[in-house]
Length: 278
Image (cartoon, rainbow, N blue to C red; front, side):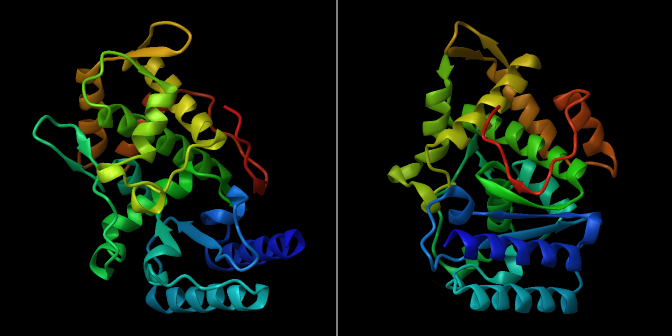
């Protein structure tokens, strides 16, 4: 299986070079990078480019992804239409990391509905943005391309998921890393996994949230109480969410990103499985 999986990743890298070249990048996510795939598990792929893809190119990409699955003996998962999930633009990433794919309640806190297994929900742009947020913050393989933009998108996604976890905890006076993990893995009516946000409690999720919480602490949204607990400033948290979700002029997102992430955090990464380390 490992040899076939490596070959499939190589084919996916070739698709990235063909369809987005170095102007964008590609990710493989889901069960194969997470190490939970069976020999026939589908390979979740998304190519991310600076502009929307033309209809004819999208059709070619979908055909190529289906061919990849046939050649490597993987099952096709068509529950979510491939036209929705195999390509995203930078604007789609902006929408995903702005948390605009979630509702807010009367107090301004975010709320996450359980997944509705119906085409109107699974093939919506809102759900596509939830998938994209998950792809950037769950175990994935970087398929090459624009590594600086990839790193910026990934760090913004980590920041967003940490904010999401805090607001899902309500008005807790203090929080722990374990509590934020629970917040994004168990939803309404105890929905979990693909029925909620697609996360499972694991080392990668812990590292992702740890990095996100550390950034929030640097910007005064959290305060360290001791080695394991943080005190949230919910006013600052809700203000940060409002700023993320506000409509932006072209270029404004990059300014906000620099403010949130600080200098010196963006660097190129080699193609391959990403580290779980903070």
